[in-house]
Image (tube, rainbow, N blue to C red; front, side):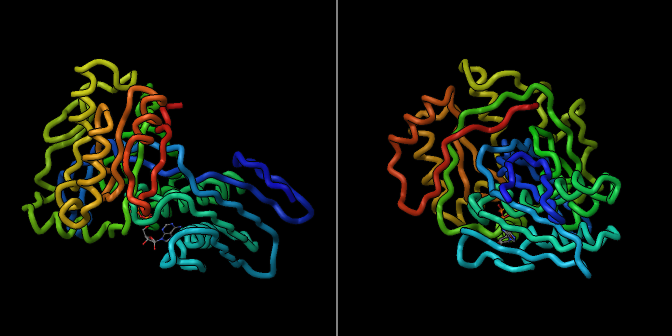
Length: 323
Ligand code: ATP
């Protein structure tokens, strides 16, 4: 059966199938504004989807009892290649909520670097929850789907409907931003990966983290300690003022500790800034670093002029704007 890309379901015999692209994200800036009693950090960030994606093919057919099969193509040696993969756990979590008795086959082709700060695993999980819900209307309420998503990981709710958004809380408070522009970018990931928990531990060791209760109310209208600027940009980086605004937005509280743990962070920032990027930042807990350019031609020329390490993963493309 040929499965067309684009999230529509096709049926052949008793098998229903769909092919989806699970997009990576970039964090355009990240602030840590508090900590919950359970140890999760409270964040603020602008999340944008990136035109770099894992590919997922799902096949669902009736069966005597529910089962999720998982097949992995690509990805680094340590990546879970069986039912423990987050993609498979998302399908299991969905089925456990329903009375569907089906066999689900997941084929994942990994293209997003792992442990890179681009939310690859979370994106796979969010995309699978989204298409399973679309393919089985009424099986799980949207409220419950959001709860399932956050139980799989703090970034998973974002990937139920990835678009430019303010993201707060531990990642579950998502507010889409209207009119956000698409941005031409170079996105570079050095080896080895960085473990998110290790970066937060290192950050916690350096800071006295305010308890959530002490944090000011944070809304787009009440900036407080918030990073949220008083307006959303309508266009990419053009004039000098605009570049200053973007550089301020892109500050990431985790970058200093990530750079201590990983020499690739400072190296790539230096290279990307030298290449003429209008602004540069680190995504999530790193080690991925990106540069924002005036246009796609500028980004391509800059990427061609950088002397990359052979193990760097380099993507020259676009962040997605608001739909
Ligand atoms: P974030 O930006 O959300 O912090 P990340 O990009 O740093 O995430 P991921 O690539 O999502 O991190 O992977 C984190 C860990 O999750 C890896 O160590 C990996 O073993 C595990 N994992 C399980 N399933 C997947 C998957 N489908 N894709 C990537 N990693 C997965």
